[in-house]
Length: 118
Length: 112
Image 1 (cartoon, each protein chain N blue to C red):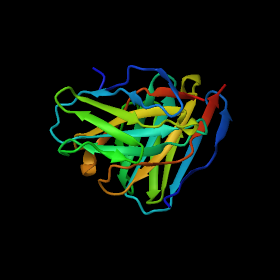
Image 2 (image 1 turned 45 degrees about the vertical axis):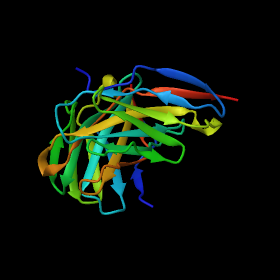
Image 3 (image 1 turned 90 degrees about the horizontal axis):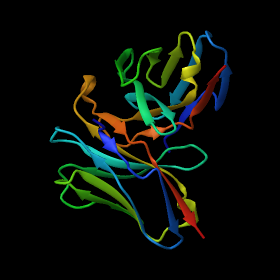
C-alpha cells in the first residue's frame, strides 16, 4: 500500500484564489510527522510546513496552512491568495518509524503540479 | 544558511561505467540522504547515513552503494551504470532528529 497518496497529478488555480492540494497517508506508528515541500522548475526542494502527529493545532506558515485530519489520515496543504510564483510541484511527505541511529524515515508522495493562472 | 552542494548539475555516462555522485553539506549535520526522483514516482530513498561510516538502505538500494568517510561528504556510487538509472538524484541533510531536510540542487544523470 502507498504510504503517501497525492491523487491530483495537476491543478490549476486563478491568481489570488486559494487552493487545496490533497494528501492522504497510511501508518500504524503513533508518532509521525507530515510535511510539504515545493519544487519550482529550477529543481530545488523548498521546505514549506510541518505537522507532528501529536500537534493539536493545524500548522500555519504565512500563506501556507496544513489541514490535518487525523481520523481521516489526511494532511492537505492550503495555499491562500495564490501568486504566480507558487507555480511548482508540491510534494507531501511523512516521517515515521525508527531506523538505525534513531532517525525516522521519510517517504514522499508522487507530487502535484500546480499552475497559477494570471 | 545551510548549504548542500552536489558535484554536477548534469552528467552523461555510458552503460557499464562506474559513476560517482558527490554531496557536501556545510552545517555539520549528522544525517545525509540520497534520493532519486522520477516523473510520477516522486522521490524515493536510495540510502541514508546517520553518522560517518554508517549507512542504511532505503527503499531502492539495488545497483547503488554509498560512502561516508567524512561527516560533510556523502557519495553515491553506481558500480555499473545502466539505462534504468537515468534519473534526477537529490542529496539532502538534516541535523539529529530534526524534521526539515535541506536539499541540494540535484544531479540529472543520463546513462546512454
